[in-house]
Amino acid sequence: MQVSYTWLPAGKPDITDGNVSIAMAKESFLTTTDGNKIYDAISSWWCKPLGHQHLLVRESILNQLDYFEHHIPANAINSTIETLSNRLTKIFTQMDKVMYASDGSSAVEIAMKLSYETRVLQNESHRSKFIALSGGYHGETIFTLGVCGIPEYKENYEALIPTNYFIDNITYVTGANDPLWNDCNFDSSYWDSFFSKYAPTGTALIIEPVVQGAAGMKIISRDFLIKIINLARCYDLHIIADEIMVGLGRLGCYCVSNEILGIEPDLVCFAKNLTAGAIPMSAVVINRKISDCFRKHQKTFPHSHTHSCNALAAAVAVKYLNYLDTSSILSDVKLAEVEIFKMLNNLKAKFSFVKTVSAIGSIGAIELDLPKKSLDQVFSIGIKELIYIRPIGSSLYIMPPLYNILSDLQIIETRLNGLLSRI
Ligand SMILES: Cc1ncc(COP(=O)(O)O)c(C=O)c1O
Image (cartoon, rainbow, N blue to C red; front, side, top):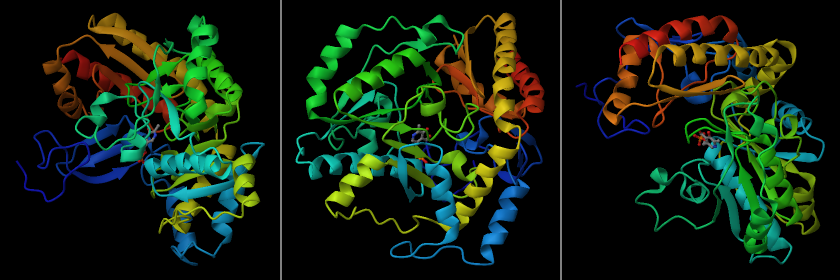
């Protein structure tokens, strides 16, 4: 075993057998120090839509370096961040502000604090709870674990985590062609009594629009989410849309809430794709009704993150958003969805332990009916087959870079075939 002084995320203190050592990452591949070129099938934790070392990233960073990398964000503005804020608000109709942090969890915390402080300003400080979904994931800070619907992440921290309300009995689907996608047999009276019980002390409903990533890429019925959101609105809850994984390209659109669900949330969180995964940055896009409340009360929001508005990150983000406009990336993702279904169904026909297939946009998952011992070996076998893929429980999923997705699917299919053949 190698000696390392780095404690890797989601890892034990010491490097475990089977970890890879990366010498170079270029395009859709991670090249190891022993020369293997491994396909990055989960876009380096879902954040590399342009793969690695895209020219656009390099050019935008170099260009910004001629002016400054970062300056204090308090009482100071620059045209790079202003261009980005303008661009992000224009995805919506009711948004007028953007606040920045450096990671997804912090963006979710900002959204949660903004929602609650609005209540305080409106003399509703008793509305301090959040309504979240079981299976939901919004980061791993203590506050965001309060809206995490996956018990494993909370184990041992229960005493520290704020308690909130959770929606169970979610209708899941295999994709947009599943009949439940547009009609989930919504039990209106059940959900009405749920909201009438919890909404009076609630400030916001927080959702991952359509896909619950950390739960194993579970796809929620569009009809179910729309109806839950509409009910939440009737009970005057804010809607926080966590688009950190799905937003800005992953499902073939900028924003899943307005383009797939047809709703405009009150607070939308973006991260990951925002800077093509090159520089950490997250953003909360804020509805005018929230910012107006702070204006009315002449209230400062006490959240002063050192690296808010980072110019290098913003420069990449502006270029990435332009690229979404001018390239075929969004339409390619829509075509890829069909191909991913075909590919995963081929695997299901070939391997009896592949139980179900689901896909949406550029995300596809298969459910493996295998003992834990075999599931634990999937990552290492994948590395031998030159594909970086990490199952979540029994769900084996792909979320490849987007810039070359249609060509890359062939590589993924071959390597997944190799992996599954060795189980
Ligand atoms: C939906 C969602 N929310 C929040 C986060 C947390 O983001 P970060 O890891 O940047 O803190 C993630 C990360 O995977 C996510 O998928």
